[in-house]
Image 1 (tube, rainbow, N blue to C red):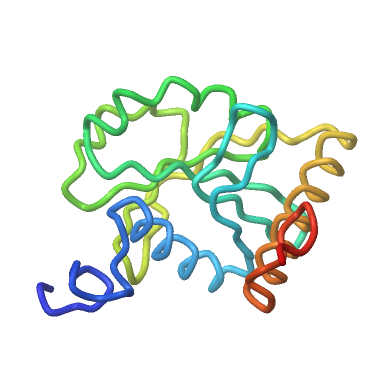
Image 2 (image 1 turned 135 degrees about the vertical axis):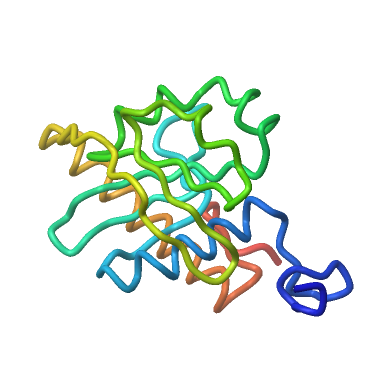
Length: 160
């Protein structure tokens, strides 16, 4: 839709393609009882596009890929597997999905919604890793909310 404020560059709501996918994924997962956080850092050197926490404490990581090149240049995705119970790729409807590993989950998305096409293989987190991941998720979400309420605040305190 060319006149869509989420997708047009003239709007302050413009989202880059990967961010638009993350938005649609987050909207869809909310309907399944999952809450999400974007651009979360589970460990130094890693930043996941979307982390989702389900109603039973399950942790999913979703990497959003907007193009073949975006996917081909991702060298870190294997390291995300240690931080989730399930791993998914989120791609647009025109993405060549045959490039994606068959043991990973697949979500087809746009800026408004998504569909889980294939569940990723389950690999339950160990208790200590789950606790650390959920704590990171909670702190990340709380800091984002705090920054929304008070734009001068950050993890290192309040900027004058």
